[in-house]
Structure formats: C-alpha cells, structure tokens
Amino acid sequence: MAHLDLSQVGISFTRAGKTTEVLRDVNLKIAKGEFVSIIGHSGCGKSTVLNIVAGLLKASTGVVLLDGKEVSSPGPERAVVFQNHSLLPWLTVRENVALAVDKVLARTKSRAERAAWIEHNLALVNMMHAADKRPNEISGGMKQRVGIARALAMEPTVLLMDEPFGALDALTRAHLQDQLMEIQVRLKNTVIMITHDVDEAVLLSDRIVMMTNGPSATIGEVLTVPMSRPRKRLELVEDKDYVHCRAEVLEFLYARHARPALAA
Amino acid sequence: MASPATLAGKVSLGTSGRDAAGIKARSLLRISGKGLSRLAAQILPPLVVLTAFLLFWEVACSRPGAGLPAPSRVFSEAWPIISDPFFDNGGTDKGLFWHIIASLQRVALGFALATIAGILLGTLVGQSEWAMRGLDPIFQVLRTIPPLAWLPLSLAAFRDGQPSAIFVIFITSIWPIIINTAVGIRNIPQDYRNVAAVVRLNPVEFFVKIMLPSAAPYIFTGLRIGVGLSWLAIVAAEMLIGGVGIGFFIWDAWNSSHISEIIVALVYVGVIGFILDRVVAGLGRLVTRGTSAA
Image (cartoon, rainbow over all chains, first blue to last red):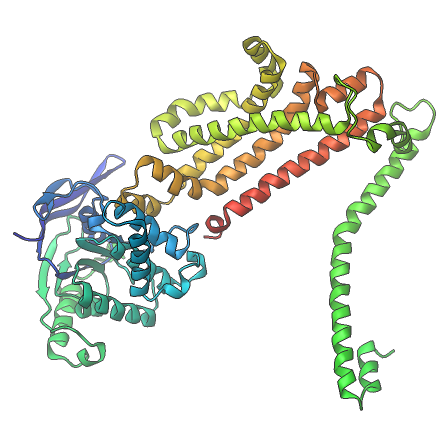
C-alpha cells in the first residue's frame, strides 16, 4: 500500500454561476521517504493539488489516503511550507515556531522538551541568531527558513511545500535548496514540493510529476530522477542523468505542453 | 563677512588639537541649536495663536455689558477652583479633581464594558456571513441614535442615575468598536487562517492567538473613536442625571451663574479628552508594534 495515495482526485470551482473544472483524474502514489515535485505552468492547478492533500481544499471527486486513512481536514501530520512564508508578524521567529510546537506536541512532549525541540528546529535551518527577531526584521530567505522550521517541527508524516523558494533571488534559492537537501538526508521525510523551476525539481526530487495545462489539468507524465544522493549541485551540471532529466522536463513543458497564450 | 567656521579655521591653524576640540564643541552647539529651533517650531505657533486668541477675547469681552467674562475676569473669579481642585465639602460641593474622577470612573466602566462586548460582537459579525447580514442593518440604524436619546430609556430600565450614565457611555462607544473589529476580522489574511488550520487551533485559541492580534490595529482605531465619543456623551449625560461629575459641575455652575467656572471646567474637559485620546492611541501603538509594521 502506498504511503500517500491520490486516486481520481478532481476539483471544480463555481464562481458567479459558472463551474470550472480545475483538476481531473489526478492519480498518484507516493512511497514513504520519497521526495516528489509537481511541476507545471502557472495556473495549471499544481498548488490546488497540494491544498487538497493539505486538506485546505476539498476535492470534488476522488479521495486522498494517507496510510490508508482518508484526508478530510488540515492537520499537522501534513505540515505546509507556504509560498509566502505566512509567519505571524506579531510573533518573534521563536514564537512562530513555538505556536505550532506547543499546540501540536502538547500531549507527547513536556514543556522543557518542547522548548528544546523549538531550539533544535531553529538550529536545523540556521536561524538561532535571529530567534528573537520579528518577521519584518529578517530577509525573505530567512523567513522561508523559519517557515520550513515551523513545518518540520510539527513532525509531519508528509511535508508539503508550495513553491517554497519561488519568491527568492537565485543565490538565496540555491543556498536554501542545499540546506533542504542536507535536512532531507538526515530526516528522510516524505515531501511533496510544488515548483515551476526545472533545475530545482531535478536537483531535489526522486520523481517529478508534470502537470498538463488547465482547465481540467491532470498528470501528464511522471519522471524518475535516478541520480544517487547526496547530490552536489556543481557535480551535477555535467551529469548524464541530470542533463537527460532536465531535457525531458523542458521538452514536456515547452514542446508538448507549451503554456497556452491565453493563460499568460 | 566670513562665516564663523572659516574664521575658526584661520585662528587655529597651528593648534590642531584645540581646533578639533573646538569643532566638536561647535558641532554640539549646532546640534542642540537645531533641536531648539525644531522645538520652537513646534511650540511657537500654538503659543502665538493662543495668545492672539486670549487677547482678542480680552478686548472683545472687556466692554461693560459683555455676555461672557474676559480671560482676566475668568482667572480672578474662578481662582478658588483653579488653585484648589482637591477640596471636598461633602455632597456635590467638591473640587474639580473629584468631579473629573467621578466622570472618568463612569467612562472607564462603560467603555470597558463596550470594549468587551464590542470586540466579541465585532468578531461575530466579521466571522460569520449570516451574523453580518442579520446584525449589520440593526447596528447601522442604532448607531445613529444620539447618546442622550438613550438616557430616558435607560433611566426607565435601571431606575437610577449611575447605571444609566454608564449605559449611555456603553451604547455610545460600542458601535465604532463593533464596526472596526468586524472589518479587522474580515481582513485577516487567508494565510493566517491556513496556518491555524494546519496547526489545528481550536476556536478559542484561534480567537486569542490569531484574530485579536491580527485585527488589533483596526480594533484600536475603533477604541480610539469610542473613547472620544464616551467623553462627549458623559458630560451631557451628567448634566441630566446630577450627582458628582464634570457635567453636573458645569450645569450647576450655569444654574448659579458662575460663568467663569464653566469656562475653567471646559478647559479641563478638553484637556482630559485630549489625554484620553492620546492614551488609547499610545496603547494601540504599543500593542500593534509587530502587526502594523508587517
């Protein structure tokens, strides 16, 4: 049985009496510890897939099973790293992580254990130095690191990342991708990441799910990324498999499923 | 003419140590001079206007048969209540301080009740589409009723002046608190709601940890308007209910034709109202440090 199982998932939105089918027949099985990226043009509904798995949106058809149980509402076992970090601006970095930890792990950890766990997760993303700063006092990359720490601190079974590095500059993005890979080597989380960056998808994923264009978007193709881990950014540039995977994804996105002119 | 700086430069050509010290001292002077002139720019205009106003008033009211006393007469006539605001001869014959305190107590109580009820009702209206459709039209009508129009009704209900006055404060200040809180709640970003949903905050935790801090800037706007309205209403209400209070003091002075005392009391009312406004605004800035800067 797959760890996470999406079968026949579809969703339609009705606005002003007009119903639009955004997703249709999304089928995906993800194994424990697997890192899966979902890539597609903007507006294709890839974030919608993530929100359905998170429980923030309800699928109109089909079902999402996590360890055999149906997903019906949001929960910390499916922690989300939001696109725009979503830190609460009136709390410090530490308090933002604490809000999640103190709620989610209230039953399983003592107060002292929770405090130590908060520090541990801040250290994991190298944010100890700014633990007492508020979100508006730190950079975009730092905010996203705190968002990742908050999600990891919930001890999720599946970590959901919605274009986590999309709003960052290229250098910061590369730096955070490396950090994420390091963390991933240690924690071996099951991860679903939404992205529109081909290099990011190939670098980080075990499999890349490529979505067709909407409306009624669905999974077009799934590509297995064979390179062994740990992966090194610089060594990969000339790696045969890397180049091949990259070409495959590019081919899918720009030759076979080029973004329709309307959706620009 | 040479500027002081070049002069100083020529004089101290050979003595560089003293020169440096001199420059330091001068720049210090210049900074404090700048600060002084900025302070003067702040204080001078209101001072000039106030003096001109008092002069005009003095001249206009000095002729015999003038309806109102001139400032100099106000000062000499009302000197007993200006010099000693703390006397207490029993009953309602007390110093201005005690009247102000009595009024502030009523405002504090009525405003505190309005704050609690207003934030709760505002949250309900902001959170629930149904509650908004049901309550908003009623609120929009009720909030236009002048404060004093509530007084006879509350006197009939409470049969006592004290709770009636507090009710008038309550009903006057609650509307801006409700309306602003509702707007604040409606403007909570979906992101914060998503975070709360993923963490699975229960409704009480969501209210305390997300809603209140997120809507705080709006809530404080409502509180600031509310406290101003309270102060407006209390003076009028006290004129009617009697007892100790600044409103009653003014009405009592009018009945005894002590016009000068009325003028002194008005100055007090204005200054206290100003302070109340600033206190709530300051409190708001303190509480919403993080939120408003986001």
